[in-house]
Length: 394
Image (cartoon, rainbow, N blue to C red; front, side, top):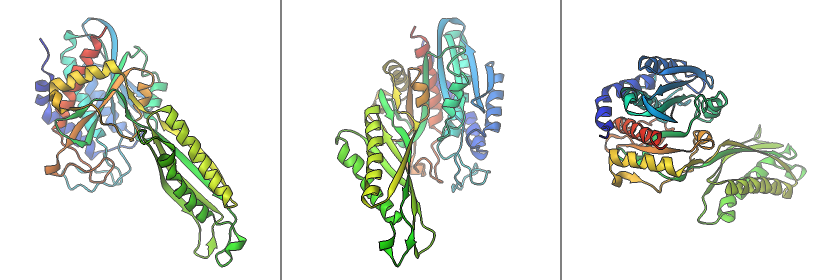
């Protein structure tokens, strides 16, 4: 008989909310999640998991062996870090750490992970193989997934399938996005240093204005996607920083641009990198200046494999109903769980967490971000169901 994970998860609702709100009140930045990691380790240990701490600095791993025959290992990942944002929500569980806030839902992810741990511990007699829970630090651009991989999280035992989720303010509670292929984009950064010739503002003919050159580069970069990609191909080039100048009457000698490049496949990624560099150096040269371009990869595309995606789709359909599952949505946001999916077949999905009527619709990374906590039992149930489906796929 199929296990009714949703009913069991709903019975955990008060505990899920209490855990999430406690974590929300005590947020910790990437690689500083000491309190969070301690809570996770204590809770997992009490449930009978084998615990390993200090993986990727502050990461925690919990292992649970099923009592039935089986050799597969399924990893479930939950990120723990907060963001350097001052919270603006007037709620009883508002952040008590000035300038730090759970503005992306990772507090909810940890609560969901502990709920998953509790339900799977109850069901260990019903499955074979191993559950590996990965509570990850530093997802927000600091490379926490890679740090845990470097410390061996995908081995001991070897991981066969990896699953993860993200509460998502773009979709209503009671829905999910489960997509095969690329769900999220590669996210790369670029820095352009413009070198001109400084001078007096009254005598521009004696100088090479780095501010003017930088401004022309910003405009030129807007053509990278518009005139180099097919209208059916997705990509983003955004300039987020322009720094130059020291006084109103001095023509700046140097200017610095920083920005982001997003793409869904390696061919597009390479093209965007090349055109950003060519345009920056070419525009600078046309104005008698020079430009140094540095492009660094941050995260790869988040690409879901067919078989694990089918398992998550079946689980989500069982919990929410097939009509509530979106299979086409994707976003140019980046996610460092992509480092895991680059080595292990798996699925990363979005769990709807929006309630417009209650004002729970602010975007991720907003100082007003919050989410509908009623989604958490749904996330617990989907992951438990999907994990057992993946373990059974011998």
